[in-house]
Length: 84
Image 1 (spheres, rainbow, N blue to C red):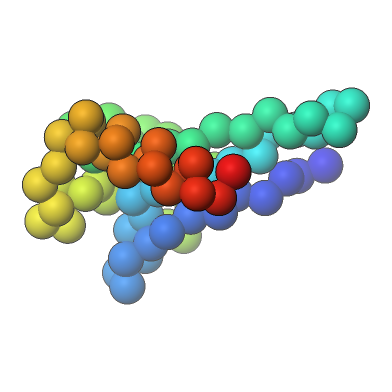
Image 2: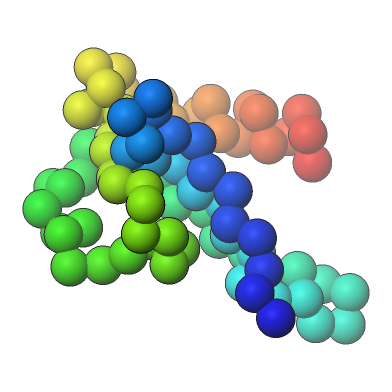
């Protein structure tokens, strides 16, 4: 069974965050979150994230958002706590 992969993409179809549910076992979901802050995007040339070929990869830095990992951690913790 293929489980959903949700993503946030730019108008040019380059994605910067993905949430993927890997599997559900005994009512518990195993999932992952990938958020590209400031990676070397050349490393993504050899993979197909989430198995979806029609979308490329970008990062917050490529979009002009200057944030460090600690900044992103702080915002994610706050937002996740709000929803979960």
